[in-house]
Image 1 (cartoon, helix red, strand yellow):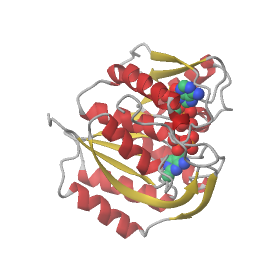
Image 2 (cartoon, rainbow, N blue to C red):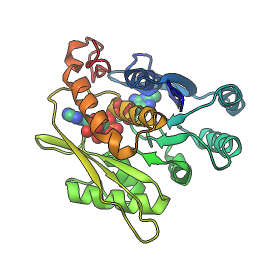
Image 3 (cartoon, helix red, strand yellow):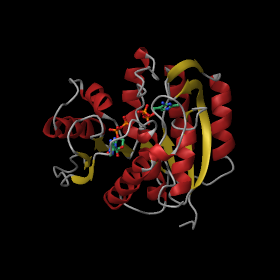
Length: 276
Ligand SMILES: Nc1ncnc2c1ncn2[C@@H]1O[C@H](COP(=O)(O)OP(=O)(O)O)[C@@H](O)[C@H]1O
Ligand SMILES: Cc1ncc(COP(=O)(O)OP(=O)(O)O)c(N)n1
């Protein structure tokens, strides 16, 4: 195993540095990975919302992907915002042709659909294509509304409903699901790894609980968590080993978020709270 793993983010941008590729690169660094990125969309956004989205031609997206995989041994891939059907299809074709079977990078998919601000980051007609993509992933990290959409249900208001949806989605796509409790209410936030049933057996879910941090600065938490899992997977950690490490780190990053003075809306987290 490489001493410093190579992690690739395939995602959109945030020029204010809180979400998307910029957040992923900070997470990779926080967990001691070497970060790389392929841009799926240039997003004119800030802590208050999304203004415009510019999607590259698919040939150029493919050229970016090939430029990395032709040259670098990639240990893990984190996929974030895909945005449109042509972008999803291009990433799928690259993945299937570059890593046909056997030894392939760990794949974490954050099924990005809507930003904290409520702005859409995935075309409505692309939801089906994103769902069809998911069977390639080892781990998916939907938030409450994203999990509901994948499960074809209303957003869960309570933990048992959330876990029920996660189980259904895990089985439907044969993928491990991280159900995240950030959008629920209560003094604590629980994240749970839910495993698919294989050979009639389902491993017990694994949970990590933290106090709910009282901050409005939660921009990019989902991006950052999925990138952290990808980095630890590249370093040989199981999902269950990674969960408490990521949870503790995210709680510290949220706890120190108010020390940053970035923007007037939902500001970023402090990825390096444990380091600085
Ligand atoms: N207020 C909070 N206090 C502590 N942890 C939180 C808080 N909000 C979110 N988290 C954590 O941040 C991560 C992202 O959660 P969530 O908000 O559910 O997803 P998303 O950012 O994709 O909408 C999870 O690990 C969750 O536990
Ligand atoms: C380019 C880009 N990708 C993803 C998001 C959404 O970020 P996420 O961490 O899932 O959630 P919020 O921070 O929006 O809650 C984004 N804003 N931009």
